Length: 243
Image (cartoon, rainbow, N blue to C red; front, side, top):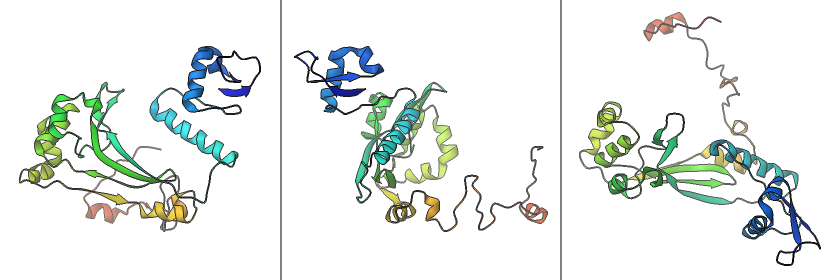
């Protein structure tokens, strides 16, 4: 939807009119509401995408970066930082038609056990956080869910029973029975920080042993095929598919 100056627009609307398939179908009142909400003026444009959020968010971000580069709107001499907080704890798995963990199943849900027992699971936020710079994630972390009963309840909402928690994460589950204190932290991606400082566009440009698109380390020649002796030492037998 693009906006242009006009002398023919009705007096109750500003001296701009919108064009494009969306503006043509939603009418002048809704178009004007969008213009006001986005603070658009003559010469501005608004773009809309729809569909699967995971797909259209990436598309919209790439389109935004492309416009910024092509129109020289991107300031390449600044570092802009942003904290991302209040991640959703659960999300809806459309393929399996069930609730699933959104990111880290071992983070503490905001509200603790009470939230897990009383809230709509899809409204629960997690104590998770990221810090980004110029659109690149530099560090990620959270507060650990250190209470066994809250951990079990969180997995139950995602369709897993207590026996699954004990079988798959028994070490952590049993350790928390002794009363672990609240704890958390974060891990920084030093390679990404170096990438920004060097004005590089890809991690492979600053990595010591970069991998190509096929996950091969051409410098080290890895991964390489194991020898028969190595397989015997590890008690492994290969059953590779026919080419």
